[in-house]
Image (cartoon, rainbow over all chains, first blue to last red; front, side, top):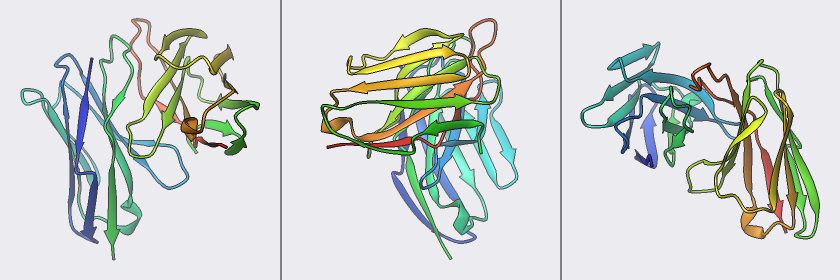
Length: 113
Length: 116
């Protein structure tokens, strides 16, 4: 089955710096890679996702890149702000087959002002 | 708000109690999920209901019993739990396409369960 590894487990940056979180997956059939942000006391919220037919997707300060050959994908947050502080989870699944999302263990991002 | 609500938000129960967690989605989705979130571990999928039919049961102990009476409501019935079952229980919903493919999952805020 699919296995998703996520690094680092914790990340501390200064406000305005960039943050990068990386994930690797094991099943080459996986074709859907969402990223979730979980703030304290809340459930995970989808912030961006990418499908295997594209290599990069951007939404304002957030971008995700996918390398299918190497089986890894990354979340990039630019110009970080204190409100970006949260736990971020990556996940992988096979959309057409309706397989379950397999999540990484999460990265706790702390942005200090 | 994501359109997925969960009650109660916090629950403390003894090992001999019986309780139920409730989830309701207002998104018109046709699939619902229960996840368990423990400290230092990835989210663990417990159950999946698609079109009100249980399609996945991820080797969950029988002391957890799901119920999906319709596409908008999902319950998790709990009985004789163990302290290691203490965790955040998350509900999610999504739309499943004709070919079975599932789109984005939306999560509720979770129920923080403590078993004493």
